[in-house]
Length: 312
Image 1 (cartoon, rainbow, N blue to C red):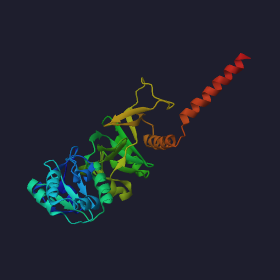
Image 2: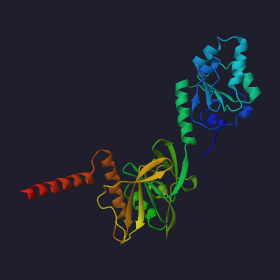
Image 3: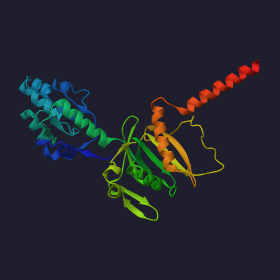
Image 4: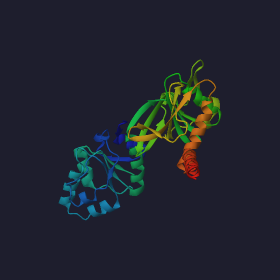
């Protein structure tokens, strides 16, 4: 998991540091953001101190109504040792009590010109992306007809060569050899290449080639949602392969189950065309058109019809 510090947030959103600069290296461990309205009223029983605290016009206007003795006490409790940062929206004036408490407890206080709601949304998206569970898989990720197809299989089975053929047909390469995957939300996996391998493809006998240089910027993309996994394996004559497509196999990555197909590879099979068709067929299934189920329905009707004729 990538670690995010308050400094990262400050640089990302161009925030102004007001006080508590010694704590700028504090780690942010959750994407949840707190608006401490109840805390301003003095209720700290369930104070989520490990979250970024966002103060807007509502919280600060209420704070100004408090007696001077309560203001200092509230801000000291708000600036706990676990609080990664306190951010003021709309470039509102920072209460002096908050500045003093932040300096004493080394809690960074930052300001943004954005409204509270807009900044909260942007910060949440940023933190969810950075703090999402991650893993890495040996394979190739291709954008085929808008479907993120992850090719897996043993080394030397032809994943990179198949990807090259797909790129020549106008599809886009995301990652080769190593695919970094993060789960940004439930059932939502995003794949991307490691920085070292971005735009690169390894072809045995040729070596490393730069796809963007050879085929242009339209042949690559920096990331893609993974919705289909295709495992390439050498043809095994003793193995029974699915010929109808009624049984849907799943592969679990992090906490997400992804549809998986197994495609046998042997001389004479045009694997790139098979993958194109698999991607289009997957899209049709999501739209409610399932050829395998329609064939099964017709077969059942024919069998039932023949049984009725036999009864006569």
